[in-house]
Picture 1 (cartoon, each protein chain N blue to C red):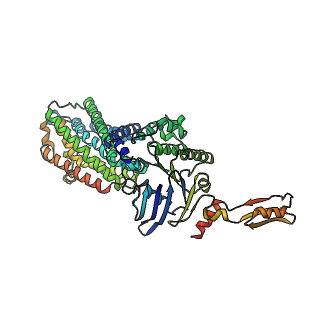
Picture 2 (picture 1 turned 45 degrees about the vertical axis):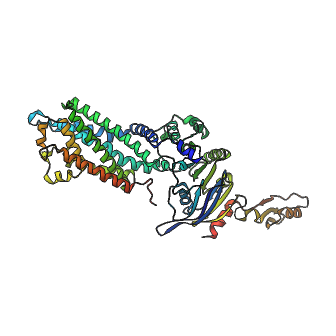
Picture 3 (picture 1 turned 180 degrees about the vertical axis):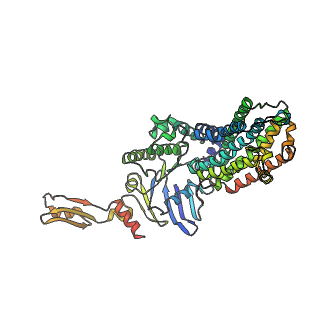
Amino acid sequence: MTTAQATALPSPTRVGLSRGRIELRQFFRQREQVIFTFTFPAFILVLLASIFNGTYPDGVSVGQVFSASMIGAGIVATSFLNMGVGVALDREDGTLKRLHGTPVTATSYFLGKIVLVAVASLAEVVLLLAVGMALFDVTLPTDPGRWVTFAWVFLLTVVSCSLLGIAISSIARGAQSAAAVTNVPYVALLFMSGVYITLDALPEWMLRVGSLFPIKWAAQGFRSVFLPDSMAVQEAAGSWEHGTTALALGAWCVVGLLLCLVTFRWTNRRG
Amino acid sequence: MDAITVRGLGKSYGDVTAVAGVDLAIRRGEVFALLGPNGAGKTTTVEVLEGHRRRDRGEVSVLGEDPGTAGRAWRARIGIVLQTANDAAELTVRESVRHYAGYYAHPADVDEVIERVGLTEKAGARVKSLSGGQRRRLDVALGIIGGPELVFLDEPTTGFDPEARRQFWALIRSLASTGTTILLTTHYLDEAEALADRVAVIVGGRVVAEGTPATLGGRSQAKATVSWLAEEGPRTMLTDTPTALIAELSRGRELPELTVTRPSLEDTYLELIGETR
């Protein structure tokens, strides 16, 4: 009888997709979540691009540069911040404890989170592109090669930052602490990675610190997708550095996964 | 076959021993209550049985499997009713029950379960709008939607008003009447007396007494207290044979203010937990 029931249990994939649907429903019903995580990057983009104006040689506007960089920052918000606070909250409010008492496996739970992050991040890109196109002359690339770059930068950023978010949620003592523990490095790195401030205004040491973390590489990757190649000389290295970008983001995926495996807990209590 | 057997269960947190050798045997279809003061080891014991916590020592079998290693199929056969969860605030009652139904091979009917826990009128309401008592009823619904053979209830009515408690008891009785085994922890003695077939008292990480609520700690054999108002004032006598005593005292007359009492479950319990302190 036990075996008959085991084979009849819905597959972890099916349960994971069902969790994804419920995660999305909860995410978009939470007004604070939608405002702070989801529309905040677009809001900052409008502010920044309205404060700083000017054009680079080749007629590229500062607004276009901010728009491209902010796509990187936006999906770090929908992955890193969303997971960091979301998983800590699931641990605090009993979601994880309840799931641990049901046939749901960790795989299904994380599959649900992946669906949430993927959909929220894609929606974030669409929102930021819409703002960029409407206000700051952003145009969609027509070269398929650029969309390939878009795809892998998007994927590696979302995966590495989701994993880091999950890992940091285990270090945090609760959801409130997780919000602080994720937001402080996030905002600091937005400055150091040339998202909030153009690269030429940053001191050398900040660039170095920024280049250790994923946001810089994500922002640079999206600049290479949405800006003309003539803009590559404005980068710290003078080129788009696709190889280094893939390597840096890939390395963070590995580090994030290891941290997750070592630190993941179902509840806030130890033992 | 027993639903739960526990032998020599031990669990420590650092230097603190939470459970120091618990033995239990809970039969299928039984409502079993674990009583004990805060910090006695009730919750730790239950969490080990639920598979939420690792044990340090002892043998544990729950529905024939070791909860420390049991898999998904086993978890589909148990139901855990959380007492402090605040999850799924943005979902409606029906959405969350339906979603949980999707985890199981043979879930119960969603609307039927909602009705059973008395939330039909709130089925379309967001979970965050529920009162404390309604929230706990939803917890029960989520715990039983998979059609479990065994349900864990950890201090389910803490913070309830008297009416909500009575309603909750009726819900637990209806669950028990379908043959579901129920393991309940509580520090309300009237709750244990109202619901449980058998109770065990845990103090300092050990079971100090076990029995039916009526016989716990030798309660049914304890001396009866007979009180009445005599001509010279109130009188009280302890006796093993209250019927004979009253027959002799009254000789056909009415004895004013006559009462015969035995130790309440509370008296017995307080004596039990006092002895071991």
